[in-house]
Length: 287
Length: 287
Image (cartoon, rainbow over all chains, first blue to last red; front, side):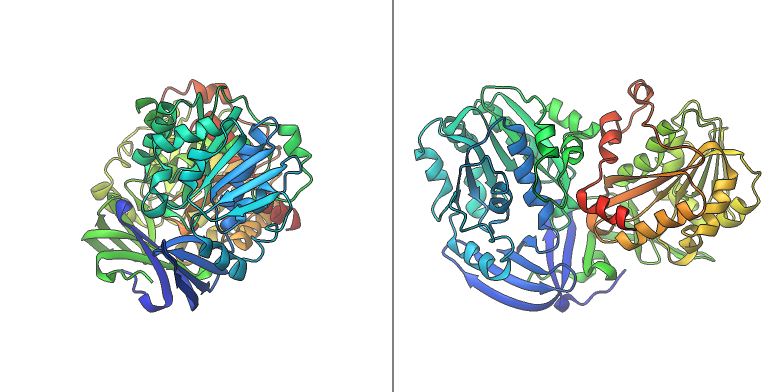
């Protein structure tokens, strides 16, 4: 059995998969207890800076591009003409930065309940906050569930739920009542996308999310796969739910002519992310 | 910082990425020191049995299907008519089992230097060894590098290198001299495939492998992506190298009519595995 020195590592135990993941750290940079959660920042040896919320690894400088790009570009290139975008959660602002790369987007409202997450990101992930002053962006620090309940119906083209896991403040973002409010808030053909955990170790949660989205009245679902090293199993998904309409591919030529840089995402990767392994198809059909 | 009890975990530190991965174990089942390496078996809490060689995690009952299917089916459905297959390494016999699912394959010779790996697999992964008595299969326990140097030229359609990392016994399987012997051993249009580590954290190794394959005289390369939780970063690749010819897709309709079961692999997954992220394209073009 390998021996390793616990003191030099930030480790996270994933109880529901009997696994542990950790990154070597050289320094604890900061910690703040907000009204909602404990936010800690570390300097890692190989992955840049690391944000940890309530002892759960959120993102690192080095590999957050995978998650942020895949939560933003597939949904925006699937919608025919997204103009008004809302991000629920997303306090590190990495998703916001990706969304604002799309010149057709006219307005992005980000609603994170915890202002301290954004203050930490401004300090330690300035590259992710580089677009926070874009005139199209509005940052609100309030309850995203309440916002979605009260927003004008049929006013949003794309809703991106970039939240923590379905425990703690994120819990209310994974149920039928929230999805029904999202559905009402979306315009004709609008799309909700939400991070939907690991297909290898969280299948019951993933199928429950999909069922709740359909129960809420969404017309069609599409789950996308991508790697994400710092999350349990290193294999992650997001799930898109569309109002009124089926999914019908994505705007491939617009991707190819996008004119902005991405590290992971491109048209072939978008197509590839839609491929479902046999065991996933089987689980989706059975649920 | 999370605290976790080292004694209940099998952990592996990945020094070149400053990361650690581990699985919760309930029991150590076995350990043998062969002439080549130390082979240990554990019972995990969530991932079935676990084989660890020289303190490096090799495979678990639960997630080995990803690696074994991706090392076997893409190359066999890319080659137009593979009849004679050689596996170098592969002592756990999981790759052999997948290869033998192809009815067109007439002969599979597996050469692993360490018989003890297969003996352990027979005992603890009997499902992976279920096809070891297939009359088309020959298991040899000898040096794969020597075998490949001495085998009859142009006699093999597909070579699968299913080895440990390029340290220890596996080291000689990652260089130009070995690849040149593979090239000579392959028939016209034959294909070598080899596990090629993580694109996120082993890019220098991956590009060095690709360069060595081209230096040895292979005509074309194709790197495929897939998830593999128990390997560093959870994101893994294999690389195919073809003799004489470019790659030209794969036998899609044969995949769709394969008539055997796979848990991960299907035609869409094969296509998806070929998609390269922007940062990978950039690294391949620069090397």
